[in-house]
Length: 211
Image (tube, rainbow, N blue to C red; front, side, top):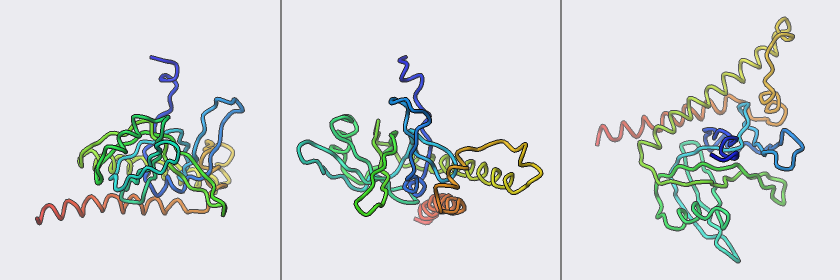
């Protein structure tokens, strides 16, 4: 096993709504090769993410060479995935797959600032695999659990900040602190997204039961 594999960051499970709000990026050292992190609004960092959704659209948007854009939808929104000559395996999946199809993706968040100052977040895939509906459903449930864990940790940190008697002994949560400073979106919004995602699975089950 290579050193790179030993030090590879854990891929965070994150819904599209939160991923697209993760517009602030940072490094934790001045080392040129230090990893770049996206700050999740629920109070964590992500160098890599793991997502599963429906590939609804693909397009070669390259000029001099192939550069594929994929649109991947989960119950909360859309991931935009870009792969070119430096991600040949991922690019070939986007080229050869006929939408719609369920896909799982491991990749890195990338931000891009437009001329009007808007920051867009996209996903640069390390790997893309075709999966089935059961895999997508399990991902929704597990991602809901991970998101709720982050929300609860954030809420606990906030409660500790508001209690003067415990302020001196409260554990630090530097990413929650950063998220509060960088983002305006209330964390409760992501709890609503979790509910929406889980209800989407129940709706599918209800349709199948009455079919």
